[in-house]
Length: 152
Image (cartoon, rainbow, N blue to C red; front, side, top):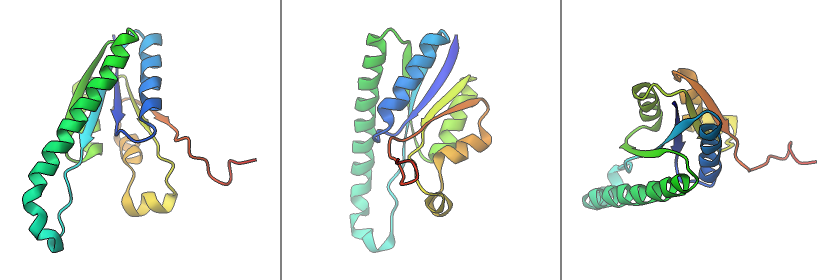
């Protein structure tokens, strides 16, 4: 059975990523591992009075992620796609790559948000980081956002 790790971040592209992973699982007699990575809040010193709330914020984010993963899992299982969920906290690239290695994944399916090259240079790109070091094939689902060059 093929293993497809679908990295989801609950942005606007998540439904397309899950649909692509489900289609791949159906055609490859595979199963989908829905993976969400919660990034811990960044603390800046000028916000020190709010640090005590960070634990509450992190717990709320993890609970929300768990609920949303279970909703996606229910949809896939209703469509007869074998599925399980995994949730991590920390840097997304690291956890996506580790989960793919741990499960001997055949594919990683993830979205591209369509950022500019300057944004990716300054902020970094999860997709780019995974593409550089992936232990398996990576399917990148493009965002639906269109640039001026794409319009006719």
